[in-house]
Image (cartoon, rainbow, N blue to C red; front, side):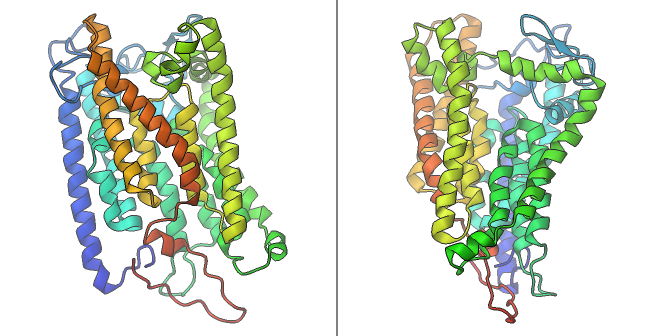
Amino acid sequence: MGFGQYTRSRRGETALILVVSLLLTSVALYWSYVIKVKCGGEPFYPDGRSHHFPVGDVNAVVPCYSDLMYLWVGRDINNHVFPFIHGGITADGHLFGGSVEYPVLSGLLMYLGAIGAHNDTEFFTHSALILTPFALAITIMLALMTRWWVLLWAATPPLVLYAFHNWELPVVATAVGAVAVMAWGASISPRTGERRLTLRTSAVLAAILLGIGFCLKLYPGFFALPLALYVLTRGGEGVGADRRGRAGALDWTGAVMTAVSAALTVVAIQLPFMILGFEGWKAALSFQGKRKSEVDTNSIWYWGLRHFTGGQTDTYNSLVGMLSPLLIVCAFALAVYLGWRVYLESGTYPWIGVSGSMLAGFMLFHKVHSPQYTLWILPFFILLRTRWPIIIAYLIADFILDTTIFRLFGIYTAGSPMQWWVMTGVNIGVWVTAAIHLYLMFAFVRSPLREPLATIVAPRPRPSGEPEPVLATSS
């Protein structure tokens, strides 16, 4: 069934899916807000920090901790300083003058959330209001592309745990939006019987969204490469041609247009900040470059390599600084290569699967891995036919990790004795999700798309002179 062109017999079900999924999303968002806001509230210190932060109710099943509330102090957000323009970083790695450790668009959203706020709880509430439309938009897009599979987004724990934990929802919306644009462009217009948009046009629009995502939290920008390769291979429209014919039909112009569109979007967004406050803009990069893989980064490096180097020694920091980027690049190259092999076998480059594989590799090897990144990868479980045991294991391990790692931070803050089950839960969560990320690096590339997305974007070669029929296949 074409994206946005459901037959009359399906419109009722589509409406039902949208209503149910949006209601469940709304419930998840409200639940998430109730859990997280308990870390704030009166009384407040002079800088607007709540006395309850960051521990809140130590007996709560889900810890109340939220990065949104944490960011209120220490980056001049509470002083309502416009981000980056007047900022910088000290020699010991502390940001000042409005600089934050996030890309520029996330910093801008934080500034908007602070307007009218006088304490961390008001800032949290304003931020939650800004984030809510992005969650609802993601639900709508996933529902139209995957029908009832959207419930993996709307009715599973990650949305409750992380919707208002950090600024993840806008960047997830750009990644899902890029897929939705490609799907809508590939769908058949009932008026013309042709694609709504050419492949090049769809890819350029999707690449712009990916560029915006890069300026929010980097990772969608990586997907511009497999998208460009998808355009290079003409989206599989050469299926049926021999290999020499297929190679000769590569669309280099379209691929370059796609890559350049993403790059120009990034430059257009970054350039004003670079011109008006280069030192403040560069401070975010310097902060990430100086950042060490410590307990709050929650990566395989801290929970694994550290035990073989005698702790966080100079050797440990040097190895992480070298191995992390090297392995990420290798993971990206592997994903692109595996995708090309699929293309040679099937005639279609699996750009969505390759994107998911790249993300899994990035999440596995990056020196920083926060539990809320689950929101990044969850849409790929929905868009791609992922095995149920993998999804269930990931969700369980992620829940265990969330309910222990943030309790661990509270124990450290309060100076309380460490509980054995907290440390055990953290290690289970870290290593089970890491193992699944390693599996997904290979599995995503060969995972078919779910319906109706698979039918919408399926290549539709046609013999010369024969008109293309209107697509009306249901999932």
